[in-house]
Length: 339
Length: 243
View 1 (tube, each protein chain N blue to C red):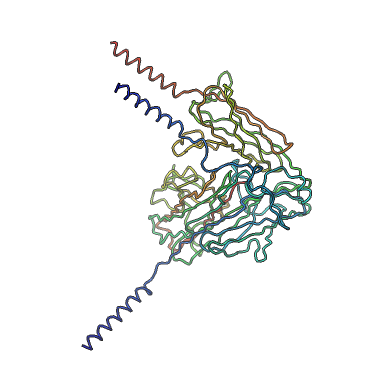
View 2 (view 1 turned 90 degrees about the vertical axis):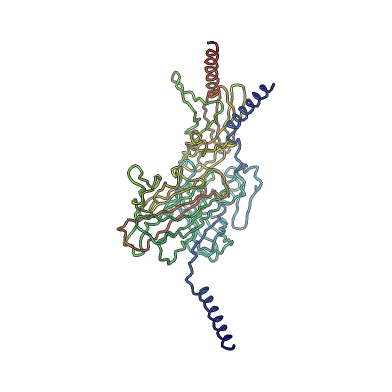
């Protein structure tokens, strides 16, 4: 009996150690998933500064992802196209001097941020004495350090960076150069007819009207358009659409958007003209007859006004074709019955 | 009488289906509300001994400029936004496992952007160098997709379905991605910083949006003569707002 109990005890101890070994000594798979989620505010700063002056901007970087090592730096940028996209340059350019006023932090120096923690970055922007008047554009970039592991597998590691743009105008007097020009103001019609050398933009009555407005800034300082696009019909009807005052950087062009604009589902209406290129405004409704479109844009008080006009003709082409088809079918049926 | 009722029903169905077609395009965007800074809810100046932030749109305020020597405006004044600019990558370690010749390996990560500023946001991508071994002796070329008429490049996606087409590239699906990613078989190579190529825009939008998501599928396929080893690279994603 005693021997039996002893055997049972030995078996129990053996099973216990077996389970222990399975739990703790079995080779476990490494879990390497690492997420990055960053927020940076404010996303945009516009500053007009005299030489030999400095300003301090408080940025906040928030980490919503896993703990991460970050690094803040400043790079120059230039507009990439007329849609407001930017191209960040590889190197820092221009006379503006940047530094952090934080006690324990410098630009291009790594810092650690735990999950759901934030770090304030006190960015000092200084315009040296003798800095040339004009515009200088920069991006504050906060980038994560890639989490490279000593894995024995092939892998691609990702680095996440988030940026905030800084637009600086250096001027001694506060005066800025405003040299705007309307480059394109047109509709994108269903048909463009040429009658006696005159081009007519033709739409079906149910078509949404896509409008493109591109303004060029020929000056050396950024400008902000204010104005509207006005639609006038042949029965006296009138609709106004306000231009969104987006910055046009020096010596560049920008597609200016207007509001309220209709939206189009380009997944289902991919053949629409409004889906084939970026537009400023989409007007939807039922149009009949001749319409005039005009725009008048200013760039602040006492600035020159630029304006442009275009027009289009709308006719219920689809309904007209439908009616003709019904008429033809009806005549065909009547003739057949008469026979 | 029944015939008339039947015809009326048919007529009504026709009319309503036609109306539905006409109004498929919404008059207003549900995503944002434009507000002008001068009317701005959060107007006024924020200042301390060291800085002065103005939340309102205006002229280059002559009085303020002359007295302090600067005027600063923060944020997109024409848009009162409650969506902060935020960028997320779901997985920063894209593990391909052990690479086997003629057997493409794929791995995915999800990019998410929340953006409250009107105008534009963009996410760019660039590889810091080719997928290569740690000793720098061997590398995997960037993909050219299936080749011939289906040769892709950094700005044009083309089908990559052949198991004998080798290289490293990516596919995108989801919100705000370039239109040349027609389906999951369309790939592009990454631009390479070592070859002085510019980063490419992989996500962008002119609309305000919360949680705009794109799934990036990385794909690598090696030839039978590719030397064995552990190949690695770093992909740099940069999310920036417009100006």
